[in-house]
View 1: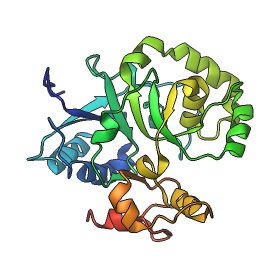
View 2: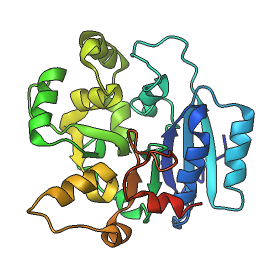
View 3: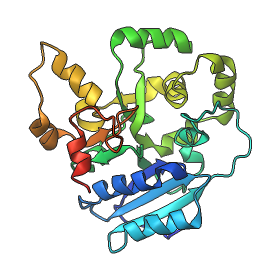
Length: 273
């Protein structure tokens, strides 16, 4: 692992991936580093199956830039968390990242590898936590939020978040997180977990999540269509997105690199090519 600058103001970015997303990750990193950070970027990649060739490829993609890449290998042979082809073990790494990342990191921006950045992350990076463990967006309306509360055994009202973009308060998470608490929760609610990592974060830490503007920090084609479909909203077009949005998230099946993509936000991905 490369040595960090002791008094630097570098921006910390976290990804958790498997080998299938190496090239997509390279695109995301490419989109981020178009925008200068005061003291560069420290990018942490948590994984369990990357090979030396993958690491070489990602380092080569960031040569001659102010980026330092740190690979954090996680060796977990058995897990208490449900896995599937759609939801591999790596999705959980973001939940307990504070256990594995260097202790001198106070905060980090987590991004899914199917996101791209189209404006600087500086404002997000400098946001105050105000006691929260996470800053994130919600893609769920109030009615569905109530259903999720019932499903997940949540008593009080709290937002159901999309975990694809989060500013994580590592200092507080190190103090408050408990692996045994997560393990017991998963054991009790395992059969009703549908989006497992998001379910767990919302259920255990939802009262310590500050909400970000979805249209700015976690915009998808679906969320853009929902917003513009509301008669009370002034329509937001591609020009608005280009000026105001920071992170675009191609979650679900709507991937701009797939032939069956339907949407308008692929223009930003194509501009990276």
